[in-house]
Length: 256
Image 1 (tube, one colour):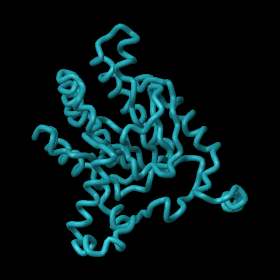
Image 2 (image 1 turned 180 degrees about the horizontal axis):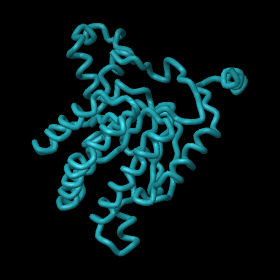
Image 3 (image 1 turned 90 degrees about the vertical axis):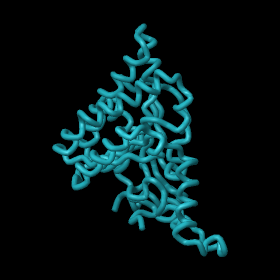
Image 4 (image 1 turned 120 degrees about the vertical axis):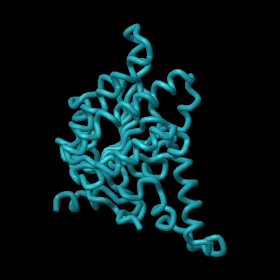
């Protein structure tokens, strides 16, 4: 059972630094096109931005970082681009795991991984096992992930675990479903960032983003750096997170 409850049931503590940041890394292809480069160059540069962002989040004391690397809808892209993304994922796993382990960063991968080739699934299992004892920060990669898929698979898992729920649907509450979500091990995101100028959540963590602060930037993902992260955090810190309460209720709690 997850140790974290939904923010609709319990109000998480507020601070100037978000505990959990979730990012849609958008704009790799447009970054490359704007420089008259092939789209593959944007994806390769995007991997470098991932490395820099992971390091920047760890230095700032962020405990959970979740990156949307490949959505269930991304299979609709051209076959050669999908193939490249898979190769980049494999090479990144092969190169980066030792550094993650050295820096105390745990890696977890969520999504419907059965669609990936055996070599990639093997590398994911190895990387998760090698970093399992790390506790400085948890880096989650969402791959072949969709928010609707997550809710559906959680509901199915809940019914398999508790068949009596089908006969007594009134017992099927948020906790019964929430404990089976792909990220039941983590608190819900405090801050959601999307790069690349689009302003939508695109089927990412639909359940978990219910009370998350949303931040959109025109910066393409390959250009997203520590300074861009700090601007997002500054925006987050300036917001009043009420979770249904009034400002008067929030202010004393923040002062205490």
